[in-house]
Image (cartoon, rainbow, N blue to C red; front, side, top):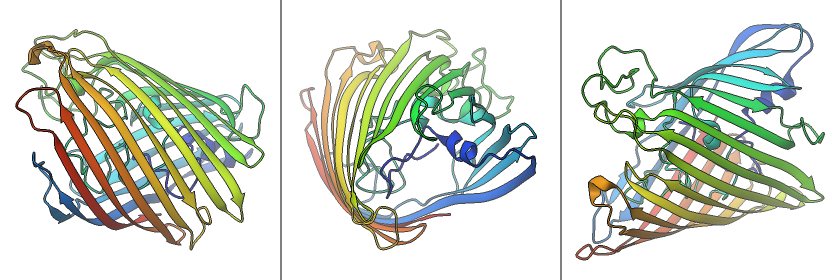
Amino acid sequence: MRKTLLLQTALVAAAGLMLADAASAQDKAVPIGVTVGGYMTRSFSIQDRGARQVDQPAQTFAAPDAEIWFNIRSVLDNGTVVGGRIELEGSTESDQIDESYLFVERRDIGRVELGSTDLVPNKMTYGTPNAIPGDSTTTVGSVGDFFGSDQYRLRFSAIPDDKEHINLYTSANRYFGSKAGKGLQLGFSYLPNACEDRGTSAGTTGSCQTFSGAANGSTVNNMQNVYAAAANYIESFGPVDAALFTGWYQGRPGSASNPNGDTLQGYQGGVNLAYNVGDGSQVQLGGMYTQEELDTISANKHGWSGGLKYLTSGSKPGSVGIGVEGRKVRVTNVSASAGGNGQGSDETLYMLGVTYQVATGILTFAGVGNEKVEYDTAGISDNKQTFGTVGIRLDF
């Protein structure tokens, strides 16, 4: 799964995976070749787990998060770029190969991705700048999900990551004629079923499952007939860089007993603004709103997040970043299997982080956070917990 991390840059084009290829596309043919990249994060965390203790230890070296990326790329005589990407987990994971997909792209038309990767709403996201690299209000990341459960994250919960499907993108500057990498970009996804790897046993994790045998794992992992769309618009207005985002999906959860469950759907919107003070100094401001209707599998969810970050020198070596990030989420129990009583919980989360760019690709960080969860159900105590972390991230 792609970790969405707004580290030291104001506007990281999560949508524009195509832009790097498009910008460097050449008119003459380039033979197919492979380059290697990736990232590695290591951190140490301390956690006060509150009255309702969660699974994480009170203090630990957080589970390592690392990937090696094999980037495949060639250019045809007509300028069309053909390539692919394979992501190998750098530690033992349930899916040792994370993403594996190929793409075809033209800078004046757009891009097609086919294979195991995220759907467009989760790849085109702009919103709240991250205070602590590796964890955010939208994505559970490398430093350990201090919040006990990922049910409150604002990333879409029911879209299955890294399943075989197709993504379509328009050229980023096709409609507005602005500078390369800016303007309006649209994205569309279609996921027919929860297939990832070849397999023959129904219910085997990661296999291409059917609904004729025994129960095939969780209903989210069996999402089928998923349609998704996203759009973002990127532009500069004097010293201000702006990015707007919206996303939507609709699909059905499947199981052996209920292969055609009720339709699930979600909506998102986000904005990220960066004011360039001068000499690389930058102030980032952003926020996001998410709403999901997950009646048949868990609960409805809606919430928002916001954040503010200051960078002394952007992504240059020696740059210091200071950021705050907050989230407010309501989860309501409407699942028939859980009684559908309309009760639920409210979560409030705040984080403060500091980063230091040691050198290009080397980022150190530290942060603290506080989370409170209030429950409607009688007899369940509200919970409050705090955490702290320190770590380092390498991007190569």
